[in-house]
Length: 426
Image 1 (cartoon, one colour):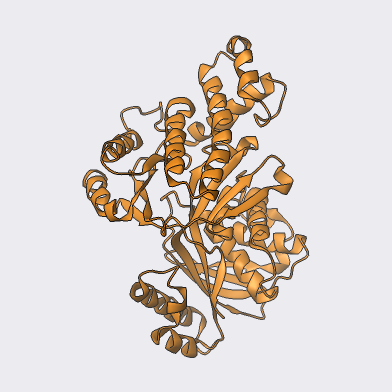
Image 2 (spheres, one colour):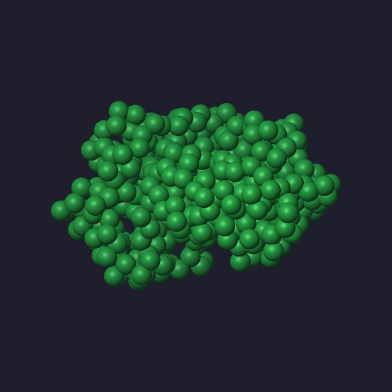
């Protein structure tokens, strides 16, 4: 659609068709008009444009299970990346993310990962385009700008949302929107693994791409089982709150790496490459031998966490399918306790004096003594964010409590967004 015509339609209320995604239509209308104006400033007026959206995500259960071929349950959230884009005839993708320099990727060079600097956004773009080609899909050039509410460092997966957005635009511009979102997620993972240089799993990309609550089983990593779950947290009367404790993420690579490494060390000592498939009974019988061989009780505790958490994800999936909110909250709390006590990813032993996550969880426990809901560590842990479910009417009180400790704006009050990667206008 020609840019001026789209701006006119948006001013006249066209965004109201997406009220389920954007409760604050006034704010989002202003945001979208601003994004179109930015596009015109950078890439010229009078062009035909389209507008795209990809949400961030929140892990609901399955804390550190995916890397050992376990199960995960995640949800898309109502914070998104919006991109305004237009096709070009240059065989080049130009992508300008808000507050970052423009990335330019020549599509004639995407065949080799070595042509792109690892750990760069250009590598991610190139990898997604290469993944489309590798899977037999069409690619072509476009110019795009993006603005995001999926803030970096907030634990809601800004990088996965960006990767999926690159593929989302290619899907609608050059493939008539026929590439399934779950396939775009796998292409985004390919990009991050092969081009960006990070051996990530598939949870983040899938949750951003598919939308809603989504269950994933990584038993067969080449053929991941993906099951969207029809449950509305909003209709049930609850909000998902993410509290950013502002912890220091520096020097945590060893902490994050230790979790899969220790789990896999236990698996290898049991004659397997990963923990998936080992029962708690089998693991318990091997504990004396494992203690003797590994000299690492924490690794055994983390393995026990995996086995129990993997089973817990199945129970949480069933609770949501049955719309049993009480069972869901009980299991989320169990997941949180297991992460704290057995997985031990709520603070780093490198700096035990800094325990923002522990403090936030303690405050949440106190709050939940008189309010219904659940709380757990959110994401990889060690620093960052916690996740708290509360009745939407109680969210302001929770914000007052948490923001009073961790700073104004520390608490995000979210909903589970029913739609994943999509084109809004085009």
